[in-house]
Length: 581
Image 1 (cartoon, rainbow, N blue to C red):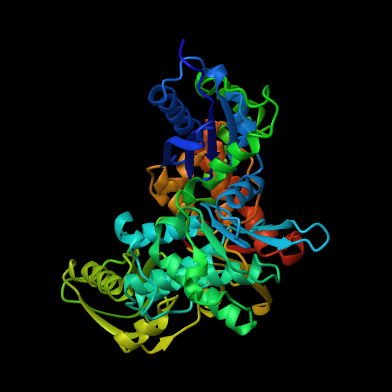
Image 2 (image 1 turned 180 degrees about the vertical axis):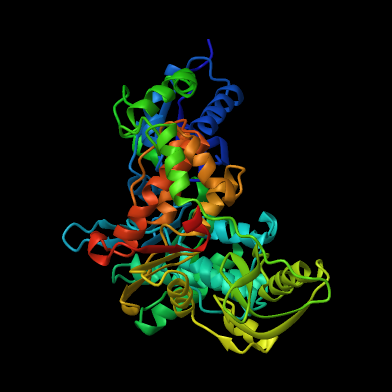
């Protein structure tokens, strides 16, 4: 009879990846490991890895194996496989204390969370006490921000991993909000800043954000350990930490070990991506034998095939009718709020068409309109930005010109005005007459078409502006300054992730007969909710309906903090593409 193997499974189910290790506890060695993105399908990827573990490790009797699970999605997975859930900070700390006992600071960046753990000597006991700190209200400064911006810049994964930091020019990029970071990156990209400088600037903003916020006033004492996917795989992130942390030591007169370069006191350990999974096993070694007995993967498979649908019904939050109670209500709503179809002006062959062109170089799209001397819109054009505002503007002006000349007329431009993020560079390139700030442009247009307007709400690609009027005069103005939850780019990227265009968002959302209840707040945390809802089996149109339902709360309660809309007046003008959606 073969000797019973003493195998432990460590399972780390994160917000973007699943990591797993199998350790032969008697030999204290890893015999199998894997790290994979789950692409919002936590249970499915977990099931896939568990099946591979049983196959590759030749596990015939699961009950002989013990399993310990951690990570943001670990609590749900563990109950189906018999695993014992281990809090992530405890798991990471145990692995650090075992393999790198000289460590005094740990920085772990995950997909949607960031952790700093300070190991501080306790003068009374002589032991180290842990001082953990995690992001709790915003996911700025995490791997998800890098992923979103990298997707926008279309940098291949292998190239991203080799992106540098040293000797590259850095530009100001917001670190406090992931969406604000995107806004800055968009503006810099449109100004012609190359991708390597953009990513180096992003690394700098993320690291400065974590140093200033998550340390909570503590100093990152050496040795410092870097953990998590971004720190493990992206060279520029590691270089950025190794440049910035020694500067703090120098400023605060921290005594360092003699003969060691400061940057060598900042380390990325072997198997850094598996530390939480390994630490979960370390936790399990002290647990009684009946705890964490592995049940195999069949209950998890049953949950995916059957149980998840039942869970979904329980979590619907009472939303059993979709965004409308019935078809009649939906038809009435569409009729009341439909946007009148714009009919371009017609011109005669040989006619000279005189007009002014207004160009809005926005964060995610470029818009242009040709306006006559008597302030009527003659033709207009719209397109999603391709990343370069000058090229976008050349194309959009070509569309305006084409609509005039295809009728045999000739266009005579009397003046040009620019607005939006790219207004200044477009003014210089086009020698425009004026570059007007967006709020003023919105107010001028709003009062021209709707003289009795009380409130103008502009929900753009990456910002939200509320202009409050009284008899045509501005009395208050709200702009999202801390968070961009509820912006158009978030909905656009969500729709595209499901395989739809942003123009299809409303139609798909209206198809849903029920939808999940989102908590309003940080857009990147809402992305985490989407991952959870997909795990629970919610369909794309149902999730999109849930986002449409929570959007007004994000705008008026979370971002603008104006809960009593009635006191503002009765005439609201909603602007930009998202408002139309």
